[in-house]
Length: 296
Image (cartoon, rainbow, N blue to C red; front, side, top):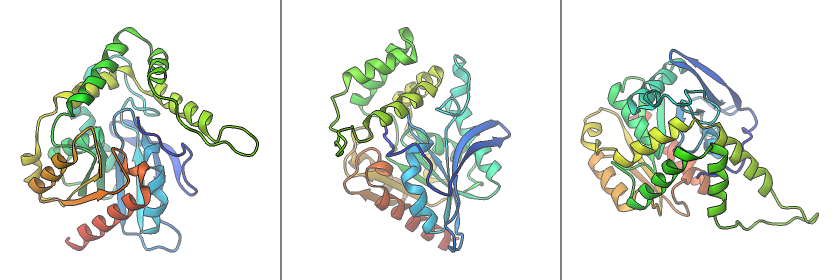
């Protein structure tokens, strides 16, 4: 589960419901920094069980590089509404059409970024219609299904959701996790631990069970569509941490070669480079976007 350092948008960013032809989607929209020449706009898609807040650490450094960033909750994800039980609403093609509608609502060509599950949804959107996009960055998102160990974790979650409420599943997840080390201030109070856990719980409870069931299943059966994607005339970027147990790093290296993509390995990061090492991740994004725009 991704753990953003804060659920509060950075100064200057605006949280609101983006109206699209396919409904409203909760976003955090961060403008270009004052005094910086605008270079472009990026649409940022989170991963499985994640949310738009996972990109909070990237908004300010990317604003300083001239990029407006719009992070979005997908349908049925945290603060974006969706059906409780209608699984057809969360088919990958439907979520991909949502992304096209989000890009259209921003009314400007965008650099598209997808983390993990969000990367595979982003790929599906580009394969439907690449016209709204200036580039595609796949962050810790592999060519096909997730690793066997992660498939087992998803199966456990799906089995739990079949017989338990979201609140009960949350308590079960917490019971299975090792206790986290926390720092203690002079007052003796825990430094952020309880507030962080409350925010994570609130996010978890905001997810629609049908969304988790369908997207979790999709992660376990996703086909390899790299050859299809390589035929699309867009600049590609494959970014990952130096370790990843969801898609092994050598698999991501090979995918980058097959896509003729720019490749970035973020040191000191694992499956969530955006929260593990946000400054290096933001720098890699902006450097790639600069080069992609230079090629236009």
